[in-house]
Length: 306
Image (cartoon, rainbow, N blue to C red; front, side, top):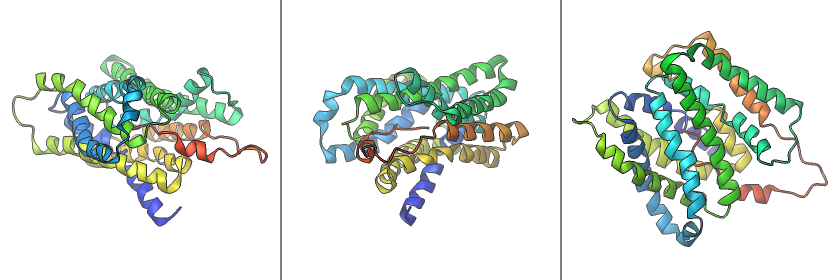
């Protein structure tokens, strides 16, 4: 990988690792609908002009139904559930639970017709990752924390379904268009609830900075950097940064919010991340198999793990 590629890789690890910290700060004084609206509206304001300049809007019109389904699974439900869950969970714990997305994705792909066989290594990865989730969530299943953990698990489910919709139904929709219009639709839907639950007074500077950071840095800038990373290094290597995000989430929570770094968190981190890596390992293609790099490179990626 080139130096430029490594810089983009490091940026993505941070840009989609710190939203949990910013969400935690924002929900202290701002409603969940306002958090989601602020993030999606700011992101759409930056990305839509780029889409209009690129053209190809007819492709968006032809795919509005799967685009709405993708938006529901990637943004509408997950970002609200995630923000609500962080009213009761630490940002580091939330980031670690979301790290189970690759594991959930493997299971869903298998249940929905993925013909690829799961060998012993991938089955072991699924079990190890599940054990990590249990180690992390088990002590918190009572009361409100249990509900919040359920919300985060629903987020992981949505984040796993959305890429499947993109790959199977939106394969000829450019990634930038997919991201921009999903954010715009979500902003329109959350505008009403955000107005109805707006704070009576202007939030403090810390909260405003978190909202602006979520929209401009963790959404708009993150998508631009993400697309550039995929162009630079390809799909497979580019997506490896998703294994770095949980470490960034834990580090940010501990350093900036003084969240505890316990042995349970360390152990669950190792289990979930190790399980995710093993569960997503694919066998090397046979020497006689037809090359698939062109097809894979053209598949759209999920608009956000975060």
